[in-house]
Image 1 (cartoon, rainbow, N blue to C red):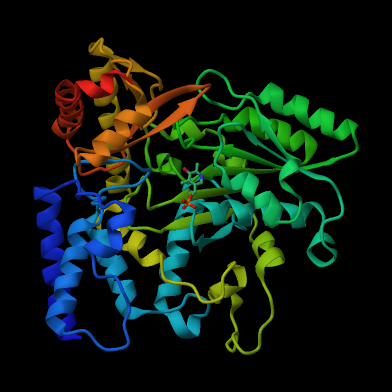
Image 2: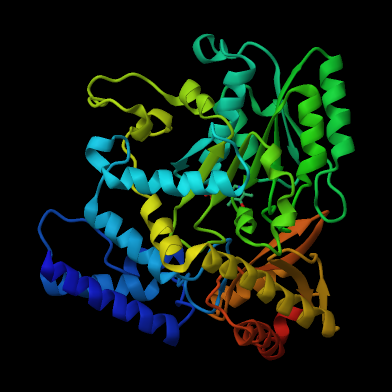
Length: 457
Ligand SMILES: *Cc1c(COP(=O)(O)O)cnc(C)c1O
C-alpha cells in the first residue's frame, strides 16, 4: 500500500500542477480517444513504469473541475478538508448499513442528518439518509409520499391515477422518477413559472382542482430551491398552504442551492422550509464536498421505515435499529458519503459553511455587476442566484461555449428559459476570487476578438 500511496501522491502533485498550468485540459475527440490513451484491458499485467505513465496521461487529459476555469456545472472547486474525509472513507471502506460494520461512522452520519434537521426546524421525529445523488433523493421523497397516500400501493402496486406537481423548470429527475415509482410520466403536471422562473402557486391550485374534478389523486408537490438553469427559488410558504389544504406531500428539492440554510443572509430564500415534508440537499454542490454527497431529510422518520425497511436476518444481526442505517436506505451496501461533509463541517464550523455559501453569492454579484456595466452583454438571470446567465455580442451561446471548450479556454455551459438560449456560468467554486470572475469575462472577450468567425453565427 505504501508504494501505491507514493504513486498516489505523485499523481496528485501532477494534478495540482496541471490545474495551475493547464486549467482546461486539451479535449480529446471521442473518435481519437482510444488511439490517444492506452485504455485497453489486456490478459497480461502491465509494467509498473507503463502503468504509471498511463495514469499520468489520464490525469493530464481529464477535465479539471477544481481549476479557476471551470464554470460548467453545479459543482466545482475543492474543499480540502472534505477531500481529506473522502480519501479517509475510501481507506476505511465501511458499508453504512449496520452499526456492527460501520461503528462510529454511523454516529457521524447521524450527527450530520440531525444537525440539518435541527437547522431547518424539523421536529423530534425527523431523520434522514444519504443517497447516491439528488435524483435519488427526489425518488425517495416520492416513494414515501406514495406510500403515505396509499399504503396498499407498496404491496399491491399502483392502481390509482396518482398526480405529481412540479414547476416547468424543475429538475428532470422528477418526471423520470414518476415512471420508476409506477405512476407514469403522463401523471406529472408542469406548473407555470413567473418571469424569474419561480412556480406560480395559483397555477398549482388550478391544476390540482382540475385533477380532483376528474377523480384523479393528487399526492405530491415538488418545489425547488435553486432551479437547475436560473437558480430560482420557489416560494415555500404559499405552496405549503396549498399542500396542507389538499393533504399533499411537499418536497423541497434543494440539490443545487439548499446550502442557503447555512446563511443568515440567504436563508430567507427557503422561508417556510420547516413546513415541508421532506428536503434534499447535495453537499457536493454548494458546500463543495467531492461527488457525491446527497442528503434527504424528512419530518417523520416513520415514512423512511415504512417505505425502505425490510427484514433481513443475514444482515441485521445486532439490535438497535436506530443505528442500523440500512433500514432507512434505498441501498444495501452503501459507501460512506457522510465523513467528507463531517470533516469539512467539523473543521470550519457552521460559520465556515455560511462563509462558503455567502462567497458564492458575492461572486455572482460581481459577475452580474460586470455584465450590467458592459453593454456588449445581456443579462438573463436575477439577483439572489449563483447562476449567472448572459449572452455576449449576440453570439449563439451554444457556439460560444463549444468553441471555448474546443480551444481549451474555459468550461462553461449554456441553458435556456422561455426560448432564449444563453451562457450559464455558475459561481459555485468557493476558492475563486473576484479576479477569477474578471478573468473569465476577459478570456471570452479576447477569444471572440480573435475569432471573428464565430460572430457570424
Ligand atoms: C443537480 C440537481 C439534481 C440532481 O442531483 P444529482 O446528484 O445530479 O442526481 C436534482 N435537482 C436539482 C435542482 C439539481 O440541481
